[in-house]
Length: 175
Length: 430
Image 1 (cartoon, one colour):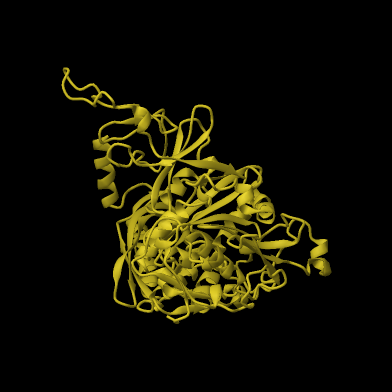
Image 2: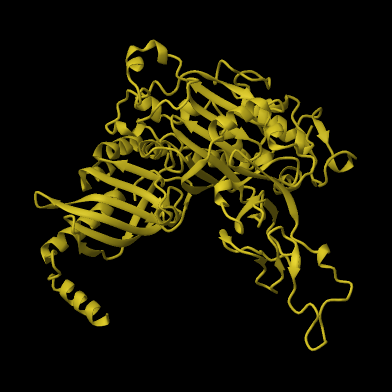
């Protein structure tokens, strides 16, 4: 068991894990970083572009996810719904201004037998309110399926599994 | 404070419920069209509410009956700030008791939910049956003939403090008062009718989350009864031109005013030819949405009502918007903090397609809800805005000053005045 794990880590470090070459790995890691930085920079209109056209994005508490409940906190199916969300938060929704800072853990990547890659990574998001208060807003893991379209990696499915079922105040920007 | 304001000295009135305030409380002469901001920030009033409301003659939301399907299942909850536990015993009966050991007061059930034959306090292993009766005490007779309880110790005098529970339409309620009438009577005929319309079939839990809102619990009680703000604060519908959603409707108050129903009817449905032709998706909405599947819906009832918010005093609301059904429960967590639970439901016999639509419409509400997320902060804005102004009042005369049902218009604050009518009554702030 340990031996196998050791082999896998070594192979992965060398970029020789079956199905993932080091260039692809690098590009996927860049995608995940760019995703977070785009939100942190407030460029929310660009957020849907990290997904394939019919990509799925869901935020769901761990408790509900583990119980197999279908309804979480937010669900988008396709870039259209994502764009609606971003338009809504810029033009319709009312809330106190705030910013996010994402802290990401290194992704664990595997080739997906169905095509593309699966990724699991931890994150935390610190929210800063306009009065200067910075505090931990969300913590959890991303479970992603990533595919390459025209040589570029994109999210086909991102499940944001929150450790807590309890959100402070409200959630309007994506995680 | 006006000199002629009616002063209520609760401690001197023989008939008033227990509890005192160091500063007497006066309701403005204008009645429930005014609400003193002190009610949202005074810790003594908050404490008094624990006694007079949450331990008083009200039915408190506890959990769903499907949270406790099997004998031995238990679920913890709160009534006001009081920790409680609901159990299902060997006979299938539901029981409610304070989750506080009769010995030293420690929590007995630590996990939010579970299944057990006995409820055992971890501190000194006092154990209780599923009805809360004390069944076992460690070292009751001491060790080696020394120590132990006095001879006159009687376990029958030491049990978990019980309260009455009733399951109604799949919802488990609890009350500390023997004077509380059965749930259906507590709701009244009209409210009970709508309650059954929404919840009167076997339920299925689709998901649950909560949010902390930084305001007194009564501000959310107001907010859920505030039909005036809906299209003004929540501009998602108007921005995306979802003009079929905000049709006129009305407000119905319970006889005792403190519960309400706000409803909207899709009354032009029959006039539109395209709606007559369509079948399953006849409630399709025109909009400027890119992802129009957000509002995929079907006509679930034949009464034309497409939107209901129903409140049940003190801390429960139910919404049924299109096909999105949820119980909202707001739990006081301090004088200026409240936890708002969103418990999303479908029915046991829903098809996969129906569940899919309910799930998708779940985007409209909740802590990230397209038409509800503002409520996460708006009540806090009131809490903050009224700091240092305990002697000032909110002004609420939209729709008049009366407290009567308004079946033709929702541009009214009558349901909020209804809440305060009930609140004054039960608090003894007459």
